Image (cartoon, rainbow, N blue to C red; front, side):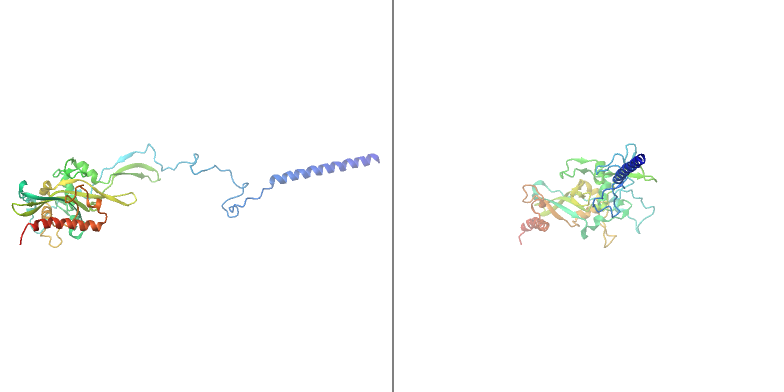
Length: 357
């Protein structure tokens, strides 16, 4: 009996020990499998994120980039060739094909033989009054629209800027530095064409797979209609021998507007100066547009000599000891125009006041 009771006691003790051990193992297993409650970030229940146990191991990224990420295939590389593409032409300088038949109802030969008349000589002792005036011609005005006549004729494009550029390219007119209106520094035709162009631009060329095949350097073409202002330097002289007031145009300078990359206007930039007395022979072979009578057109030399253009004064030697432009000390544009008209009246009144009635 004692042996049986001892055996039963040992069995009970072993069962109790095994129960305690199994309970501890179940408790450890529960701790391993139980996940802590997710933080209330608002992303777990919305589908934008998962709990830490559900997230897959990923590489860390930052705003500065990841070295393990693959570079895009269209990034420029050092071994991609660069090709310089020659300009196919300029709208202001394209070679115009001559007509193979008479493109008019009459034979027009006079325009080819026209020569400007020589200026009347003014002795230095007889020039008792002289004033220099700088003007600006805005071709957007209705009276100045002939400057923008864009038709093509046998002698080329009829825009005024195209006529000047063609004469410079053919070395019929010498261009001078735009920063000095005293005609001190001549420019080569190549330098003039570079200043007129819009520079160069590098354009990538892609293949069918979207990879960069090569880079092409192309010249930016400039619209000739964007040159809509011209500066004119002239001198008014009173000749006491003939008792007349003469005006002599000394130079003409085209002006190009400058814009930022966002299209904001900066300022007007002069391109070059030409000496007008040297250009009279060229301008006498080109006719200006006449919208009222196409058969009664005058030459460009006659247009300037007859003052058939509209302009406003921007600078003068009258009461200007500091050699400043009107906009340097008159900020209001309306007051600048009124001051320009006041200068015109002073020059006109000088001649009129010499007469007695």
